[in-house]
Image 1 (cartoon, helix red, strand yellow):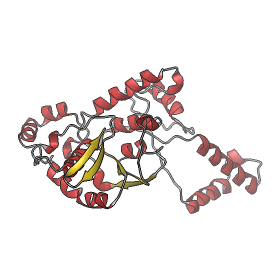
Image 2: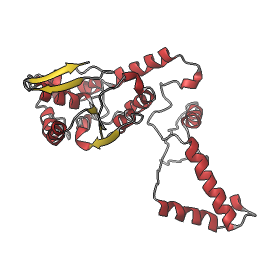
Image 3: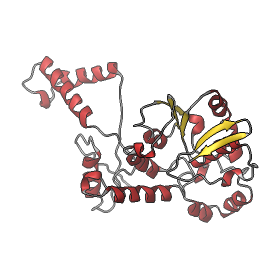
Length: 288
């Protein structure tokens, strides 16, 4: 079997341009679309690329001196930087753009629908969440966040980092705050897991706290890896944690101090909600 690829030759620097490509490809059969993004911020590498590009017989710079070619190339980089929008997995699927005449209420309804659907995926590899959190980050001020000190903590996963991107506070990404590792089930919905691994699914139902996904983690494992985060949280004041449901359940249970371990995986953590916990001598006060 032979495989062929056709790279589009263009600077597809924003979501709108890439969406047009995706729409065109979707009209064909037997094609899969892959966008590759590389990001380089190393001045030495950038300078070397400019030198290489402008030092050979490139038809783009025919009739220009070397200095003029370099200046033209640098101007091209600056123009791209001014309009560039980084890649998002599945960015052209499901989410209407704000300039399409869609009302704010309709946009919010779409965000909530996609988030609720994405919540059915237990693992880290959930590409739709990056799309939704990027859209939500544009309006993150609607959450009316107050009393945040100087730090926002996120996981190392793109979707939490993107949700926090517009908050005007110092941000720190913790690998320890990543969502529970679902191992071979990563990227699958609960329904798909039940169909593919019925025995594992039943075992998980019997003991959700200790059940470990094949090649992944259990809630017990997550609690152990959160210990350094919790120790640091206790030393800090006014930290906003943007996290994932399993992680937030563990942190919530720790600071409340009133949950049995078997109950921890079932603590309800609602979407689209900020929960403020203030430690006291006998647990913590909670505001939502």
